[in-house]
Amino acid sequence: MLKKFTINQLLFISHLILVMILVAGMSVARYQSEWDTRVAHEVALAEKSLTPLMTDISAAVAGRNYAALLMPSFLETLKNNRQLLFLDIQGASDYSSHAVAVRYLQSQGVIWRTDVTAAEIQKFSDHQAQLTASLETEVSDPVKRKKLMFLLNKTKGELHALETGKKLTQSVALPWSLPDAVQKYNLLSRDRVMIVQLPLLNKNGGVLKAVFDAAPLYSLKGQIYRTIFVEGSIALLASLLVIVAVTHWLVSPLRRLASRINQDIEGLDISDLEELKRQDEIGVLARGLHSLTEKTQSQLKLLRHLSDTDALTGLAGRHNYDRRAGAFYHTARIMCANFGLIACDIDHFKQYNDTFGHVRGDEVIKKIADVLRNTTRKNDLCFRIGGEEFVALVHVDDMESLQRITERMRTGVEGMGIPHVTQHGVVTISIGAVLIEPSTSHWRYSDLFNLADEQLYLAKDKGRNRVELARVEASRKAPEREGDTSATG
Image (cartoon, rainbow, N blue to C red; front, side, top):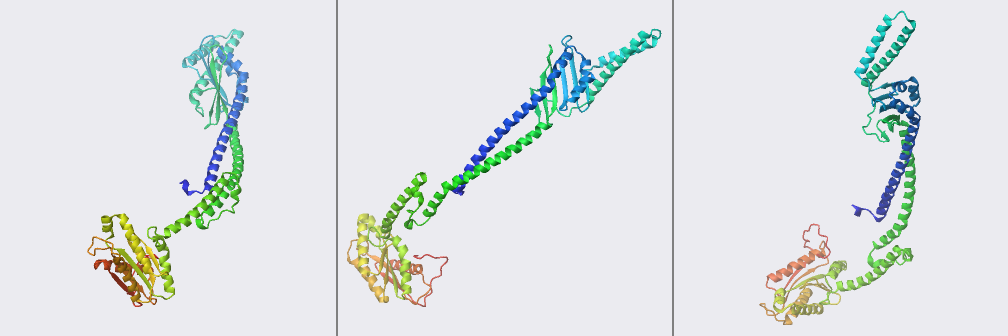
């Protein structure tokens, strides 16, 4: 996948990803630090609001003094703390070890006991009945009657408080779920509340759990998000500008080098590039490329010479043939001259190599190349296009001239008398030749070569060591072909 990107794109993307990771990491760290600070501040404020009450609450729990915990003044104090949504007091008396459990709920505006039992209600109910009966029988003593009336009203109040507490405990459902294990504080993000737990100060201990409204805290959380987003965006934008500048400084020289390298190596000249004067790695690369280019151009010249010439025979090689044969034919057509194509093949050459060895075979190839070279004129072309295959392109006046040239080639080889184990007893060649007249149209070089090749195989089929000729006249149509655009066939 990475191969699809340019260096410029890879540098930009990689640096952008790195910057985004750094900005994201720093933003997360910044957010966490800011959020922890804000939370710690809110917890401190919550504890500060509860601290003045801890002594009175602990003393009331120690003496199991419900009256102090349920008195209207204490309830008013709790109501004045607008952030306090819920208060749960759980402890044990220091003197009787009885449990003490009281709750306050802001939405109901009440504080009540949660540890009321049916037996306790029955006890106060019976006591109320006794006081009522005593009040009805006592009619003579006003002082005693007044005292009974006071006790009856107090009992009624306490019984009402007990019944109300039991009813509230059974009916009131908290709008949030208190976790079983509360540490110093817990945040319930879904309910946007904060739970603070403080230990009571009495001997037998206890715990106070307070639920505070954390909506303002979460509003601050949104502000933190927005602030960090703005800061991160500014940092990312500044980083992008730096990335673009650095990428341009690094990639532009490489792009200029690449555009030059994309040219033909033989005509490549990078001596005018400013990058050659740089002292960094790009300068080293540019100078190395310049040196490599000069060496390559020198080697190409040598290689072209070697590839154009067959090393064994000194004739033009296959590369030269592919490059020049079609052009030579095209020139002859423009000049309206007769053109002859001669294809030669050494007879039974594999058998010769197998019998006499490749060293002797190479000697045969060189001698036959000399015959072809001596038979053709200077303005004709001779090629070795394969192991034992040769092609000659000649300008001739007529069919008789082409026949004389090919016969001289054949007899010249045969006349060398190089021993062979064939029926002829000497090394021979088979020749297929074609003459095309200037008036002939629609014949491409590949068509002409294929026809000469057919004549060569015809010569072999007829016994070898012979010449087969063909003429392409104006009336002869070019063979049908499909998608053939080869210049050389």
